[in-house]
Length: 115
Length: 232
Image (cartoon, rainbow over all chains, first blue to last red; front, top):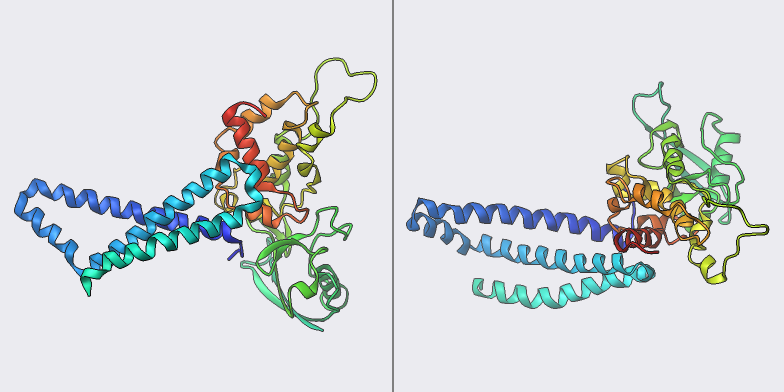
């Protein structure tokens, strides 16, 4: 394992969250496709999403989308303003801070019905 | 202090797999890692192979993966690393023997960006004048010693050895942003190609690996912008 800095971890997380979101999109396309088998089948499949396990996975999905979006903005800004490269670490910690601020309340709201 | 030195060893054509060799070396905290390698080679095991030339951070021969990061063995001190030091050859190049890697591909990419001044027309009677502001634009990228630490710290390069790599881009940047140079179009065409600057994912490993403190990712970013916006 190469011991890179914040930039390398941000990149690895960006890849994993990107793949996670892609996996969700594939599942989502398949589940909406079930409508061709009639509304009853569709409702049955949709009911699966109310299972607590799915609810927890949804929180994971929200985390993945949020990190991927924020880090994407960070990379875009640094690509367009290379002169700010010296502060790339602070940018990363900014992403982490905004992530925590947005994710913690969102996760609370999403998981509340479970308890 | 006593140092345990673990070195990843391999000889092409003899060993099937790389293996770890362990050496105990007595050292001062202010010794360089290069001193440890010398201590092993001169007094314990003369078969250990590594490159070094000047030993003072200028020639760029002894870049290697030290405790998980690319550094020059002649610049990093024992006190910065502790009593257990792990040394591997740089990643992404094939290993010739022990810490010696095949760098011909690396230099071929360096040559591909035409790393020299190209100026058509009659040369002036005296020097080609340049203002301090014009010179400052590429000051950072004049410092490269071609050690390979940046290119072999880059995940994009590990996964695609055809990527021209940070070092070649740094050396292209040195001439792209030189007001006296006139070959920007050719260099930008090469760097704007599929194995050029767009392979860069703005990971910053190269910047952190550079033993000369060059802001490598920034230089790559400036080249990306020059290609995108058509101006330097």
